[in-house]
Length: 120
Image 1 (cartoon, rainbow, N blue to C red):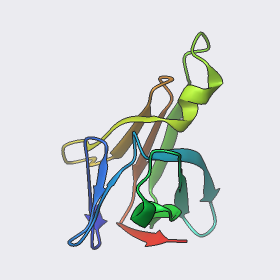
Image 2: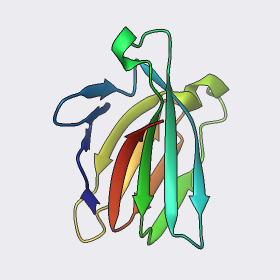
Image 3: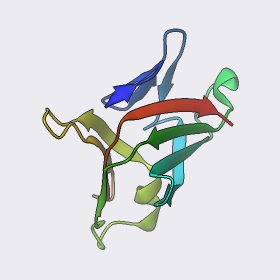
């Protein structure tokens, strides 16, 4: 999968000019999956720890999605842990899924043709 203009590593979304800490400074609010358009959008909002210049919503959008799956959260964890990213990584080829794991144990896996990021 091609990430256009950014990379995802550990807990960060990095662009050529900025680095966003998706674990400490942003809260995950959810996703929208459009089956017919083969697209997935993930959304984060700044929390109280975000710097003044980071007070922007972040969207990561996947296009040409060929596989998308979720693993359940640990029901013994507080629901608030669903908003906190634990780590993000890319699985090795041939699948190359981008994996988002949250503090609650909830996991999102997506494989597609390309991904973009935007401020909303």
